[in-house]
Image (cartoon, rainbow, N blue to C red):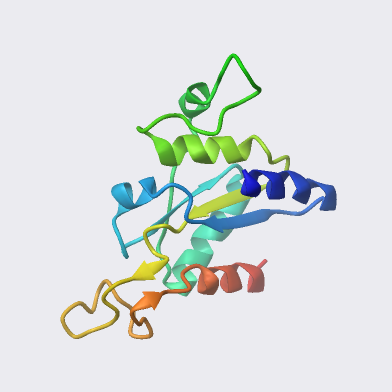
Amino acid sequence: MTLADALDYAAEFKPQAVVDLATLTGSCVIALGENVAAGYFCNDEPLAQKVDEASRASAEKLWRLPLYPEYREKIQTNYADVKNTGGRYGGVGTSAVFLQEFTSYPWAHWDIAGMAQDGIGASALSPLGHPPYSIRGGTGFGVRALVSLARNW
């Protein structure tokens, strides 16, 4: 709910775009795996292209996920404008569509739940899943891609 409030508030500043990063549901970890890639949602094609370019340039793997209308149907309710959960299945999609309800500008949501922590860190035994600068604990995932996105805006 706090993120939804922040997205709504951001509209007052008439942004060119907003990118938020959150460990929202954990559902993205099921789809993309832990310490493999983060998923992202985007309501604007030019912004999505910039996110993809930033992902490639930074080597931080981001995979675009869909904002299907069916997810919106799952958060409908008779008691409010919208509810903040669509149930157990499709949680990452319904959560993103819920957040989209509070945007009126180009927006991207990066679900970094599977990337925020690394329990192993870089080692000779697992060179692919762990960048050489990675240590055990918080990864800082997304910072490199955000910097790349800003530099190439």
